[in-house]
Amino acid sequence: MDNPRIADRLEAYASLLDLAEANPYTARAYRRAAETIRSAPVSVADLVRTGRVRQLRGIGPGIEARLRELVETGDLAELAELERELAPGLIGLGRYLGLGAKRSVEIARALDVRTPEELREAAAAGRLSEVPGIGPKTEARLREGLAREVEPRPPRALLLNRARELVGAIADALGGEPAGDVRRWRDACERLAVVCAADDPSPALARFAELAQIVAVIEREERRAVGVTVEGVPIELVVAEPERLGTALVRATGSAAYVDALEPLPDAGDEPAVYEAIGLPWCPPELREGPFRGEPPDLVALADIRGDLHCHTTWSDGRASVEEMGRAARERGYDYIAICDHTPAVGAVTGLTPDDVRRQAEEIAAANEALAPFRVLRGIECDILPDGRLDLPDDVLAALDWVQASVHGGQRMARREMTRRVEEAIRNPAVRCLSHPTGRLIGRRPESALDLERVYEVALEEGVAVEVNGLAPRLDLRGEHVRDALAAGVRIVCSTDAHSVLGLANMELSVHTARRGWATAADVVNTWPLAAILADA
Ligand SMILES: [Zn+2]
Ligand SMILES: [Zn+2]
Image 1 (cartoon, protein in one colour):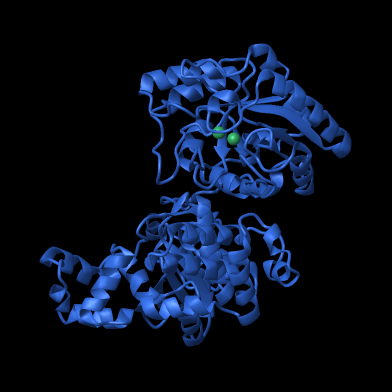
Image 2: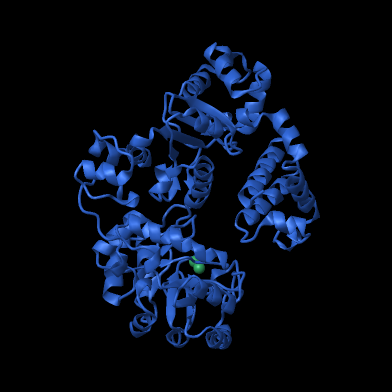
């Protein structure tokens, strides 16, 4: 049993524990364990067998016992029992329709239905109005949703990393390819789709309905199905005839506006053949947001990246030491990494004082001896105070190789104040890059009122770059902003803001977000060799 499968079962268990109104801490613990397992670099089944699984963070004796059962028997008896009792298919369908899990269970009980199909039949027969608390408006909305008169959309957009995982796992299981928003690397994904090829679509459609992630199939046609997860997230499967696979992939990748402008599309077995037939160069999916028929630029690629300029260590809120981060970056093939821990004003976590910065320099020097010619740069993620001053004295900043400036507190400042604050900070000659410029957290905190156009003007004057932060909830700047920054002549930095060795993998999200902003390697500071980074200081 592989890690994603184990994680899926634990997550399903956590969801059902929530529904059964078990202790919320328990459900949270299972969910956290699932997350750890999903990203574990080793086989968790092996760790269970050799009695070492509790070395993983957040795995105590209770969860260890569940994992043992899962690895030895292939499932969890209690989970199977809960699934029988709580009908996750109904819950997934209910969530997709905008109902809470408890409400779905109530409705199912009132109508005495056990499956999504039965619920649909009951709705079609006009029985929803029998349920206490369902008025004509709600009934109409539910019937509309069940009749699939609207495009399927998740109850809320999924973060790109979660969507990639989900769609990637389904594509792998079916031997297909991820399409939809994931393939265009959208920051928040709504249209999730997988395309695969087969002359006879039945086996793929049947396997799709059987997948652990799919609790109910809400729509089924000859070569297409839409399933939902227990969270109510709809996923579309297209089973194309092999000679039409390329055309199906273009259509399922979207965006709708981009595809509409290319139609009518000829049938072809792969994407390059589709483009050739319509006389256009192949277009990277990241550029398919709006109608575009031109020659795409040579976009920056992961392989162009030579170092990571924003990461944390145990000196602030990171989980690995300076040397561990350096070593991991070297293993990724980089030439350098900048250690950018927090400063005291960040508040919630430890920040480095001037004295800490000097002491950290010794540790960095030792790491450099161990890792040479790889280079660990002395950096900082320095807080921008509310009045625009920086959180460390100028002489301390001047001694560093790389300074990121960040707004953390006071994100809701008015536009003029916020813009003046950031402008003042990036005029400090030590500052090389503005971190997560808008401060947004996708779905949780909007972008600040910062006047980005003004920031680009000042950044250009001062030779300061702007960051494309690769943390999935941030992706800040986003693609549209990257395009504006580049048009203004400002360079970008693709960074991970890694808080662990694994976090360095966020570079992929950053680079693809930069690609959505039409960035080429020349636009990205950390495609430069080390000497150029140091010389520019
Ligand atoms: Zn930050
Ligand atoms: Zn950071």
